[in-house]
Amino acid sequence: MENKTLYEKLKSYTGEDYYPFHMPGHKRNVDVSFKNVSPFDYDITEIDGFDNLHAPSGILKERMDKVSEFYESKKSYYLVNGSTCGILSAISACCKNRKRIVMARNSHKAAYNSVLINELETLYVYPELIEDYGINGGISPKKIDELLKNEMEEGNIESVGCVYITSPTYEGVVSDILSISRICHSYKIPLIVDEAHGAHFSMHKDFPISALELGADIVIQSLHKTLPSLTQTAILHIGKNSIVDEGAVERYLSIYQTSSPSYVLMSSIDECIERLMKDTFMPFDRLQKEINELHEKSRQFTNIKLMGREITGKNSVYDFDISKIIIFPKSNQYNGQSLYNKLLEKYHLQPEMASLNYVIAMTSISDTKEGFDRLFKALDDIDREIRLYELPLFKENKFKLKKTSEATSFSKISDAVESKKEIIDIEKAEGRVGAEFVYLYPPGIPVIAPGEMYSSEIIRYLKECMKNGLNVIGVKGEKKQVAVTAESWSALEFKRLSLYDLF
Image (cartoon, rainbow, N blue to C red; front, side):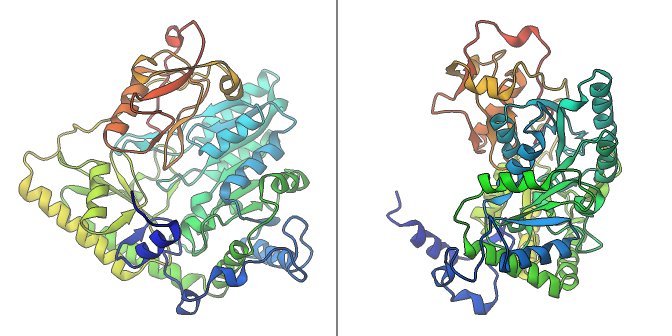
């Protein structure tokens, strides 16, 4: 065990040569004038002249109004508890007096926690599948229309509080928000978009258009993910033509946000947006150029593939965020986790995450040419190594999940969480109904949500993830145990649950 404080470990790490292809978006690459400033120097509370985030009337109101003007929203709110508190507030505001939510099944755990807290019934919409890469595609507007039409015909439309989707996904997949928002509004239902990974959208012609411009009622963005702002900083926007009650949103923001918001974090939001207002185009132009050059040079690889805009136009993929570098090894030697480990251990490049089949490297306007050059050199070396020393080449032996049936929920999430539970070995869980969330982190999308059945496919997937060293939350201890509802019956006789390749 290391005999260091967290501060000492952080200080030591910043002196090493690891390059951050991960969030936060400032990449520890700040102006020299900020490098020797202690956060203690400007860590204050709500003293005279500095306003109050929960009842803004002075400088905070003025600055948030500037943010709203910049993003062209009806209203924008600083978030210092990350996108999580924005998601909780948005769903609570829309669904408090309703019973159900239409939600994309590949949503972040924060959305599921809001479903749990509000005791909502979920009506899931599944993303399409990009089979060539084994990842989620977009959310089909047609599927949402069919679901809402069915609720209308059955007389249940009044019980639906909102439609909630994630766009872009962790991998940068963007859905057709304009069509989805028009469909939602035709039923007088608000659309919430988790755009946590898209705070940089609409700032350059080579990046997707923000959901805020495409009719979404509430859009939540994490500045810290893709822009130069401190971790935990985010913004909730209400669209110009939103049909949500902004008073309800504000009420829940005051509940889910800390009553002592950090002025260090709020000033980080303020400084980030101020810099973008002064110079939006040039930083993104430089980033776009470096990304395009990396993709162009990577065409020479024979055993490593970078996913690009070839995925658009099918599988409900409307657009793709090129700032996400999605790296697929085509090799018997490497899977996503082993490639991640190689980049980290040999080349001192810290990626954002690994899945079984790919690695995500996140970029932002704070990345440097040196960083991109190091990434290309590492991938070039690894590609050459595979080419020279590995025979035969990759022959579709990677772990892949088949697209089968969609999930069947046997109870509401809240009912399953509050039920009597048993802790059993995962090997014995087939046919049992989950009582707790099980997910990989990152990205934080539940593999099993409470109330859903464990299938042999799910169990096999989770075991493969653990075998490859991925971070699986919700499987406990050395015995690999999970929580299930203490029901005497098995769900196997019902429709089987499929992971539907969420990752």
